[in-house]
Image (cartoon, rainbow, N blue to C red; front, side, top):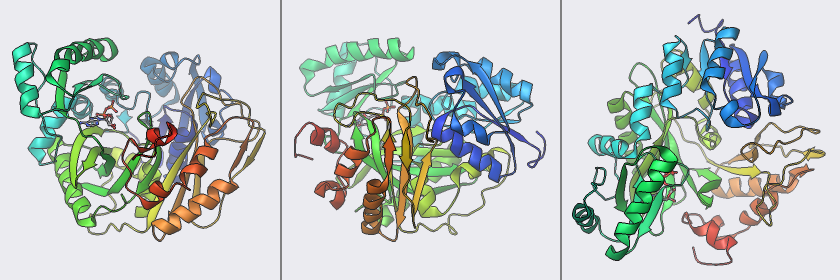
Length: 454
Ligand code: ADP
């Protein structure tokens, strides 16, 4: 690879994250190439790239998931690095391997580490070895033998959850509340695991009834050093999709988070992990329970940027180019409180997709307010992709100030011409339980279903 100044980074993604990566790459003085589908030929983020190159039709499998087409674009444009963003090919070890085989740099961990973390049984084993707390349950895949499955369930205790080792996107999971439901749940889960993920391996763990979702952001360089960058609470979810995220996690003692962060750093060192990563936990009754590791940058990374004052995407690119981490754990300061709202193109009443052409746009601003969005007036939001159109992020000296800033920013924000979740977000920012902090992952679905229970 050429030196840092002369290097070219190819962005293999679209929308707000493509824009975010392009901004970071420009700041680092890199040349940029952005691949896009035919449906995204007018994507406003492409303006920021030195070169834009069409790689195929709208359907993701023909464009953003087409690794061969992306690699061809990289070779044609002389790219040195490929940043996959999130979603699409960001967690594909095969793609990461193909990039490395071409002598290019994949902005992310080594393919072998990705493959290991992509298998949840393997990941859990690695975490136990590193001293990261995991959900109770056997650290092995379930055997085919019915007696053995019953014995594993008795050891785990009910309720339990049967999960696909290769699972993702909240699919391939079954909750089992009594021994009588076990055989059928195992059979269905195994069948789904094979059908959705091409891997019949399944495992079981204790089912937690009212957990919060708390995750630790890490960053590791190629010299074997890693740091943790605070915790995020992402418990406000609708059908397993995160809606609001914040950092720090309200009401959890800083000492407990620091202990967990240090364990995650140790796990990174043991794994030989490099780049940005997230350790996801379910938090219940004062205990953290590891569920999975995401080996990429996440949608909600800006809240960590706001409390650390660091540009995580620029750091991710720099460490991929071999730079050492610019900070040590001791130098890191976690300052104030940050909240992110995800704004999606959905009808706020029916929650059905509601794409359209942006006819009017008014962005909020002022101290501590940040908008990550690719929308401009006149842009037609395509229906082929993820519904995320904007992220509104605020920072305050404490949680109350952040909440107040988010309320006024949401009031100011206007997006005309398509449906958006702004009305839902305004409602949530006025919700007493959310404002108190610490609701469980089931709270929002319950609220939307008309149940007051959290
Ligand atoms: P995926 O990779 O499909 O997102 P995860 O393992 O991250 O799978 O789990 C997705 C969601 O399923 C979690 O956010 C949580 O809501 C629920 N879940 C997973 N494991 C458990 C568990 N042991 N107890 C309770 N809920 C769980």
